[in-house]
Image (cartoon, rainbow, N blue to C red; front, side, top):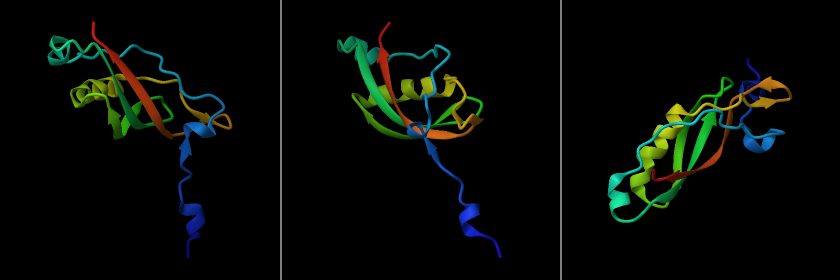
Amino acid sequence: ESDSVSDIKKLFTFDDLPQAPRIINQPNFAFPRSLIRRGIKEGKVIVKIVINPQGRARILEVLSATNPELIPAAKDVIRQARFTPPKVDGVPREVHGEWPIVLHAP
């Protein structure tokens, strides 16, 4: 018989960390030309992501976007993003959190 409590994986969030992971690269993305033509040169997409112990991120959910046309660009940023490895008590861990991505037209 297994102990169900020990089978539950601890889910860490950014709040569990002494310092939130920092992005260490500059991901490339294409700001939608259709928005630029309409005079929109900035927007924000808030996503829920998971960062693994190696600092790679993946998207869990799009929480909001100032314009839905920005979501593909935000997904490109997340795919390319590399973060400082998240650590809990000095041990690299997977963490979940919200990330506001502010996108600017070139």
